[in-house]
Structures are given as C-alpha cells and as structure tokens.
Length: 104
View 1: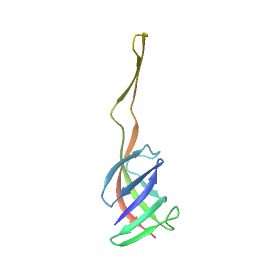
View 2 (view 1 turned 135 degrees about the vertical axis):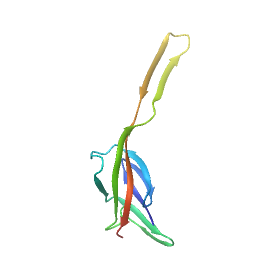
View 3 (view 1 turned 45 degrees about the vertical axis):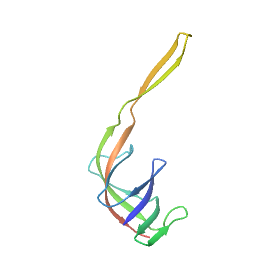
View 4 (view 1 turned 120 degrees about the vertical axis):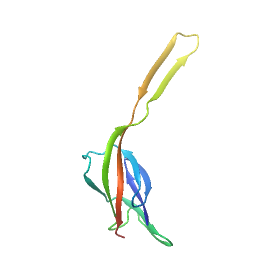
C-alpha cells in the first residue's frame, strides 16, 4: 500500500516503514503525527484519487529526528568590476518514519 501526501508545499509518495526527510515540522522527537492531506491512496490496481484530497485518508508517522541539510554556497561575481558576494544556506528538516496508511 502507498499514498501521496502533501507536506511543506511538496508532494511525497510514501509506504509503511519508509523513512524520509520533510520540511521542518513543529513537533518533538518521538511524537506521532497525522497527515490529513492525502492526495492518493493505492494498493495494487485499486487506486483512490482525491479532488484534491481523499475523504477519510490519513497517514500516521513518527518523528525520528530534526536536523539541517548540507551547506550550499551562493556566489555572485562580476568579472573586472571588483564585485563578489558569497553566502551559504543550510535547510532545516524533520526525519519521519511512516507507521500506517488508512482511510479512503
């Protein structure tokens, strides 16, 4: 069984037991969180597609950890003009483990 959920403005295809990184969520490690924004639930040839969400669809997950991703560097430079800017960014994430998919 699999589902497509929406979190942080992105869509993710998830299955029970899967561990994935999402945009940072405001919850503590070890907490259980429910995703009600389920866009699709499928099992074999039986697929339920929502408009935009599946009625009664729910994905339950446990928060494993919080962290920050790898650093990316942003560099702007104009040659021969004595102009150079450099900045960095590390995106925060929440790592979750999918427990169960239900509904639909």
